[in-house]
Length: 285
Length: 153
Image (cartoon, rainbow over all chains, first blue to last red):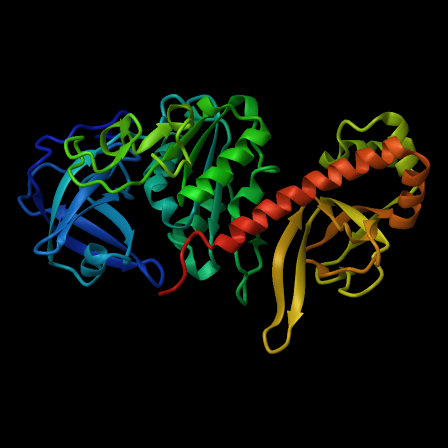
């Protein structure tokens, strides 16, 4: 059964966490880990669209939004990747196989994969920003014939900080996708590009007149990326970004993630750039 | 067969340059090729050239005692390498080493400087293009300095 969807999926009961058990915990780098979850009630898997997120609840600690990083065609394996940087994610990083989490979702908007059909797709990402884009890449590659060129530009601090290394290598081996990786700082043994991710944009092989760009990374990196894409000739309507804010309820009630007239949790996290351009990068919003 | 003028005209750095100016600068250019590991220039040496990279990749690096050669940036096909030839004291600030077989067009800096002195329109056009590259690299360096992906805790 093909359960893939480009359209956002609505949570069945958005306010009630469902119990999920950890099947596997995988370390991606020194502070980033991936959890593979399965519903404890044995019920239907959670269908989701690439770019959506869930609220993950560590019992007795707290709840946080985390993008889904797994394959939309395999929703029975609910996969999340995150960094251990805050109270909840540090507690989460100490969980292991067999432990339980609460999960609400899926929430938010998705990457515009239907709109990108027939066009070049350039994915620009940095650091753990690859996690929310990985479901989109799975789907693009699963339906490869629907797209023209697919180009992935990935930046990381160092080669040791890269996530999903095995998949990057597997995708690089394909003849129908072009992957360019770069690091901000070269460590010993790195033979690839050195420089920030935006330096890959001017010479990347895509047609600016007929391209959709999917961008995810730290917000300042996305600002520079949008500028480089504009310089390459892309219009704001061709650029999509995934935003991150302090999401609490995930359904637009609490207002914690308000971004001008939008709520990141329900109007985002994926926005077409012209929807947020006027306030993107402003302190006072 | 492609002439030097054709090769220069199709490189992104000189795209759209006035054909008369292409004729002028072609007289200062030659094709060069470097094997992997070969240095294009060394820090402190006289900066008498710059390069339009056509194929391959070059690492800009500097040597730090006890740490070895640290790569600051890599430059690839379609990019331009070297601007120290433009300003006194005409010395390279970094090492440039080919990471793979690299083909480039090398320009004689002194020859170009003389032609720019004689033709201020050409000089302005060249400086405008180099200034754009410098701005891009300054912005990239600023982003690099921000260390946006976060350090090890």
